[in-house]
Amino acid sequence: ATAGIAHDMNTETLLRTDRDHLIHPVSSWKDHEAAGARILRSGKGAWVTDSEGRDLLDGFSGLWCVNVGYGCQSVVDAATEQMSRLPYATGYFGFANEAAIALAGRLAAKAPGDLNRVFFSQGGSDAVDSALRFIRFYQHARGTPQKRHVIGLSRGYHGSTYTGAGLTALSVFHRDADVPLAWQHHIPSPYPYRHAGDGQPETIIAESVASLRRKVEELGADQVAAFFCEPIQGSGGVIVPPAGWLAAMRHTCTELGILFVADEVITGFGRTGPLFACETEQVVPDMMTVAKGLTAGYAPMGAVFMSDAIYTTIRDNTPAGVPIGHGMTYSAHPVSAAIGLAVLDLYEGGMLENGRRAGAHLAERLRAMADHPLIGDVRVSGLLAGIELVADKATKRKPAADLQLASTLSRAGYEAGILFRAFGDDIIGLAPPLCCSTAEIDLLCDRLYRVIDDLRPTMR
Ligand code: PLP
Image (cartoon, rainbow, N blue to C red; front, top):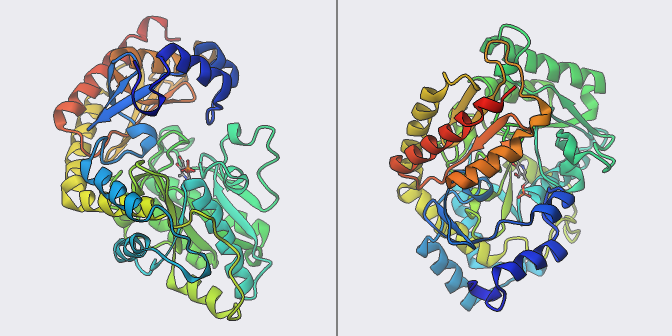
């Protein structure tokens, strides 16, 4: 028997229908047809249950989004109440809804510095795309339309819209897609573990600053609009830059006269400890994008925060009666906003604190695993962690590509009853929910250690 709306379909029918009709995001269509999907049916706290009744400890919060864990009744109640009372209201033609107004107000009060203006999107990709459009409007409004170039990092990920995929530098998102676009550029990512030089924080920071300066000089300072980065690169392999890196890049953008945009889609909403990762270095971006933890995955929603200065420049240079031409049917959706408010209550009601405690325990446990011969690097920030596997610890040699460790790891993890993500065959990503107990973190680490240790006989 299956649950919910698909009540007339057994697991076998679901698997066949999925294979025949449902296109999955960022997946090999051939592999999907060959292997079929794993169907998840329910969740509670940090755990999900699949269609075979198997319980899995979710060490990745879905897709680094279910920060408050599954089955939070207050969130369900807020969504139900909003859905019964007013499931939809447009933000066009001068209308608004109470939930979105309240959420914008609360977020503006929490966001760094003067990021007081919030535009709600449906997720992270269109938050990034919206930010890029607002930047265009801003440059036109201030009389510098030639400032159109945008710079990102070589292991950055910024979503799957055309512009976001171009700003992303991961090759999967460029293949056969004719991106990056002509105005999109990349500089090398800070990558302490694989740094070619002395690996010292000051060296890495100085190199990133110099790369940005060089790229801006090459394009012409009067031609560059903005620099985008994730405070910690997530999909690029959970790469944590040295302390001080984010503040140095912010400062450099100010000196170069370009906007600094922080993409906090993963790092926002307690993932690294504070509400926003920028707070760790008292960084105030000109714009910030968020999604995921904003609604903790209970419904789609993202947001762009912009500074008062950007907002007023666009406003003051657009005549009254002329719309700023950017928006979607579901911008500021009331049900998502009601969920956002309920989730914010949870963060403020102890979830951030619990996440910090669980994160400290995760760091302790992972660092204790780091002397394993296959573990080259462990990097942790709050409840965001990356483990880099190597075939040879001394030389940092990567595992042989034909081992295809990513699929082996995810299969072995599933069999061990844990969910995590494997990137590019050599990096394991962890992002457990903030509601995790230390006992759950222990269980996750114990099981993960066994999964890694089991690779020893075949590793080369
Ligand atoms: N930006 C970053 C940093 C992300 O990690 C992601 C998704 O993982 C996105 C943007 C895109 O967000 P979404 O998948 O919600 O469209």
